[in-house]
Length: 476
Ligand code: FAD
Image 1 (cartoon, rainbow, N blue to C red):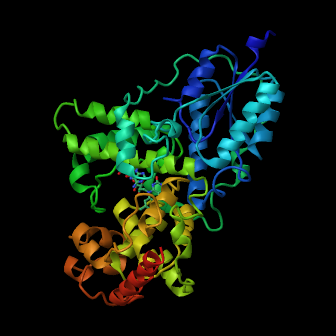
Image 2 (spheres, helix red, strand yellow):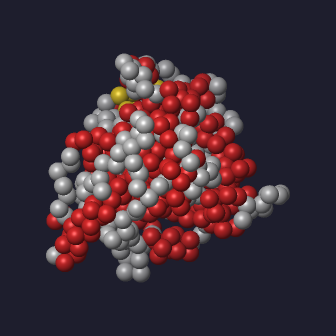
Image 3 (spheres, helix red, strand yellow):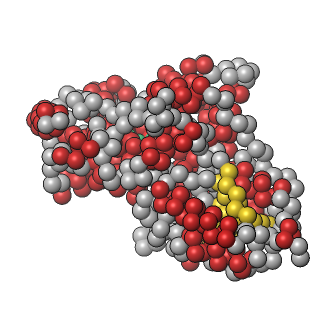
């Protein structure tokens, strides 16, 4: 066997797709026999081990990817353990001459990838990486002074000032022969799915993990949601957002595919979505890029305030009953409770309601944003190492380009404005299913049947938060 005949190993990470997967395409083009692996590393990768909802998603996504590869005559090798050692061992077992992967941007993952590249160089195994999961590599977007960006608008302007994102690659059509078989774990042995109890019924009803599910959701969004996006994306009862976040999180679809699909929709036959909907949607993809830019430059974004002055902030020791009420959606504030229950039932929450529920925890309960971030991490199917901490820090005011500290969402007014008919609350809070919108979003919520009384006084808690944040400002 000549060196060029040795296998190419494709290492799948958060890119569980065949289309627009540059590492996969490059490996196939190398003409070598092909081996494909996913490695579960809960020790050295990520900001912390995956939460329950993400583990559920990962199981199903890997199942779909395995089936898609099997249809092409290939097998997904599953391995578990510290990624650096596990991948190196697999390369040795296979006698692979080349390894291909798509780049990652979290601190721990970059360290793993850099160490492996160095190791493979010593062993004269080619290690090739490609850009796949961000439209703009974080190190290429810089201020005039050569710094990273701390404010979204100039960041996004800088991104848009260069060449537009490349066209997505099609899924490979011709596949080389498979490398000789090596052992693989059994996915069920990873125990990613919840048992005793199995709480995943709501997730199963709401989602179709996998590449085909992602493409189907994109189609639905292009047909129905996109034209409503600019006008209605803040209304949680209306299906105007894409709900692609978990698919993007696991890389079942790429931002390049989204970018060009949405741009192409502007040339579609009627009904053509308004240009402002397209631009708004692309700018939200821009927020995803910005979050990853932040994480790239501050790997501990989930634990450390982006603005150091917040280190002195006087968080309250959480009152256990209040924290539990927030987690369970029994605060007595209907829009907060609807959001927290949507999260628990479906593993997802509408963006507007994420902001409202986060503001309630941080500002009305004065509980450290990190406690909320960790709860979302465990319960969101789209729990994302960059978007989640960036979102929480944005609401807290400690983040980059964050909401000013005096912005304290009033959950009653937010409910009136963004769920004016009460449909969203009625969908998730059965105790209020027969109430009118005026009763749901009434000025002074009160216990109704089984529905709880408010756990805090809005005015008093608002004043307390303003005082705490003002003290921080004065102490600056
Ligand atoms: P769409 O409106 O259809 O947007 C398309 C895509 O753009 C999204 O899928 C997402 O990838 C990206 N996007 C949209 N809004 C934002 C945003 N504000 N910040 C960053 N990216 C955005 N998003 C996550 O993907 N994972 C998280 O763990 C996460 N945690 C959050 C926590 C808080 C407290 C807040 C305020 C926001 C959080 N977000 C998170 C951002 C946002 O709420 C979700 O991306 C969005 O609700 C997903 O729904 P969608 O796919 O329908 O979004």
